[in-house]
Image (tube, rainbow, N blue to C red; front, side, top):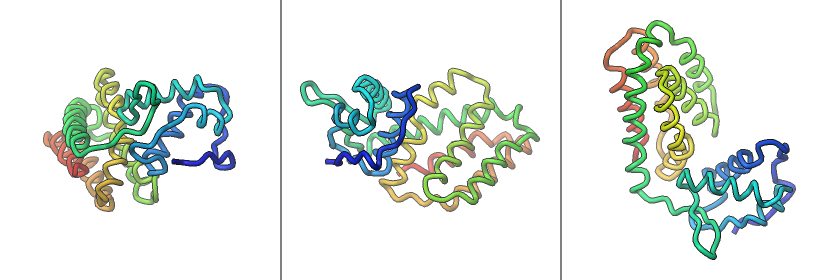
Length: 209
């Protein structure tokens, strides 16, 4: 069980505490600091972060919606056991949404890929967790360009960065070649290539185990 160490606890501002605590717990889950099956004790987290239990409870509800945490009667919350079925279900849904997003975004991005290129440049020099962050930012740019609010909300509700990070960590997925694929996708948008949706779909599926 993870010990409480106030010296390592992040400093939180007083607004949006639930969201900040959620991110702290997400970082600990995706890094492996909090292991599947490990209990998350509200009062312990609250004491460590110097907050009341209410925002911790709010954060845990959000994590349960993202399928990262499960709450059991009389036993509190714990990190879910992530299964191969979870990942097998996640990636086709993500890939399908992004294929649709690319098709919707194609007209907007034709010849106007400066924003995508900016994400690629940052990705090329990124290290550690920043690699995933900049990679997801590239994909989010395409989803935003689709101009469909419902698609964006559904895409975000999947916890894209979280579940992709968990899969990469669990399956030791190679990421070094992904920058080149992002360049190819951006170039396809520039040329208004009608295959860009399928290209993005296939790119996402390469993250799948």
